[in-house]
Length: 130
Image 1 (cartoon, rainbow, N blue to C red):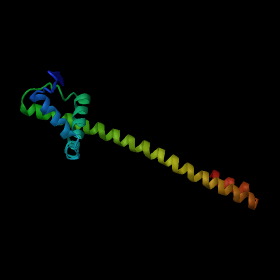
Image 2 (image 1 turned 90 degrees about the vertical axis):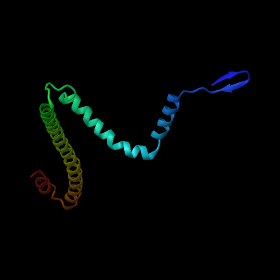
Image 3 (image 1 turned 135 degrees about the horizontal axis):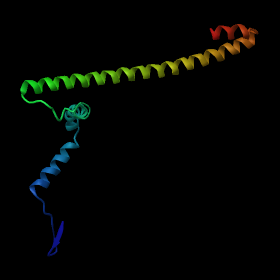
Image 4 (image 1 turned 45 degrees about the vertical axis):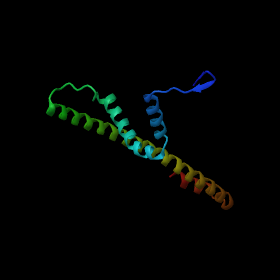
């Protein structure tokens, strides 16, 4: 905005108007719903290019390019499956440790209380150690 002869004047270009309209559109919920699928795919494409070198193929010709892409995507799927299997194993181990640890703590506290009341602490302790 510039002040000239006591009046304010706003100058803008067609490019600035298009950019403003585009940014306004990106703030809507409809745009976010449409774009969320593309955002997920772009992350996969980025990973393919980084890990497998999909951006620079060393072959020429349609069939060879198709075959190279197919093999790179298959390799990417194996990498993701291995990562997923490892993560499942880690989560399972942590969940078992957490749940079993809590259950054992509860059982130990109850058994200790009962053993003190009954007077058979050695029998119950031996049972817990099995």
